[in-house]
Length: 215
Length: 283
Ligand SMILES: Nc1ncnc2c1ncn2[C@@H]1O[C@H](COP(=O)(O)OP(=O)(O)O)[C@@H](O)[C@H]1O
Ligand SMILES: [Mg+2]
Image (cartoon, rainbow over all chains, first blue to last red):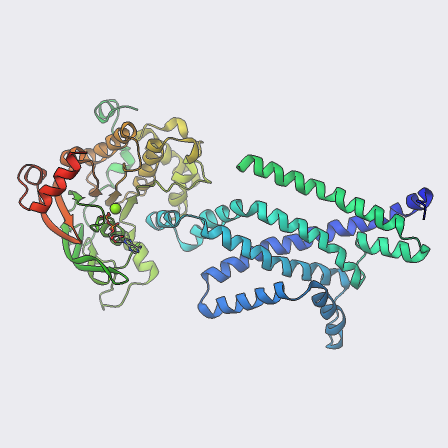
């Protein structure tokens, strides 16, 4: 098995398409995860007991079921029930929802580190519940949660590779297609691995910057 | 930092805009008391913290609560600020209950908020919002609660910053300030809402002695130059003697003795008061 440079160069454009889809899917599902997770955390904390139980159940479901099953279920089973959604929105949605569950845990964790005295100060200043959340609790929650959230975004980015299973042309999918067409797998998967790793670097840089700044 | 005396020579201590609102005549005609605790009891679980407590404070009066740690002083202030609910009894602010409406039903959140607006509180740990600058800390409530324009709120905030001698720190974050500076900001943040009753809970206990002085100077200024009703918890006996009209001595959830500072410090009646004063004065 020898490395074929000309073949490697030939598949780079296809892999770049995969890179593009990977970025798209990562950004879109991260947005769902980060915002959805925050809303879930607030809902769980501010809701009634019944609401809390519902949110918890839903979170356990999202975290307990393998992503592949969620993907296959929405891709293969829902159409039989008459609901057909294209692969890309399914991929974005499933990753977003699952990671929203993880992120909500992070937000909740950071909320309980906010001293109750700050809430007392909000009451003493007569801030409404809405202002208290919007201007005090949520900003502090986010600030404390950033490093852990970035770690999850990193994990989500890696898991986008799974979406090739339902045909989303992410980097992993493009590598698979290239391999299948030529029966050469060394170059596509080696390159894909290297590109995935290189794409990690900006995240890691951000993470270390943030940690330096807020250490 | 100027001392209170120098301060008041150079300019009015409290911004003019504020003076007419501080300690305005009670809105309810029959309100004899600014704040009134009636047979208040408070349990935390099975632990009885306040025992049938009665306390009345006149509008404009400066009352200081002293007593051993754990005797229930903080709880009294927290009850007044609606940070805690009593187990029994009633609390009235300018004649209006902060617990029940006229039909005896618990107040709604908005009714409670309306009455609570007449109180402000400053805490031992300052409790400034760490992610906001000094100016943002000061304008948050005015722009959201009082719905002032940003410009108006900022102008007022600057006046109050000048009053506490920190106009140079407008854009600093709390973590960049000394404890004494943070506490002066916290006082300004409370005063800016023009409370008629100001609750001060051991506001110098977390400070080194040299920083405590600058905070007490600010409170002296407020006490002497406004009509705000003050309810103070402190271990600074000299300060208590200076600013208080009346001292109430707490012990195990009861007021065991109250009276003028002279009476309490020079002629205490209860043995427990004497023992307590001895223990603090020897420190
Ligand atoms: N949130 C709470 N839960 C349980 N116990 C409390 C709580 N707050 C205060 N206590 C108890 O109530 C008693 C009175 O406390 P506090 O009012 O803070 O006293 P002081 O301010 O005079 O030191 C103490 O024994 C304290 O441990
Ligand atoms: Mg206390």
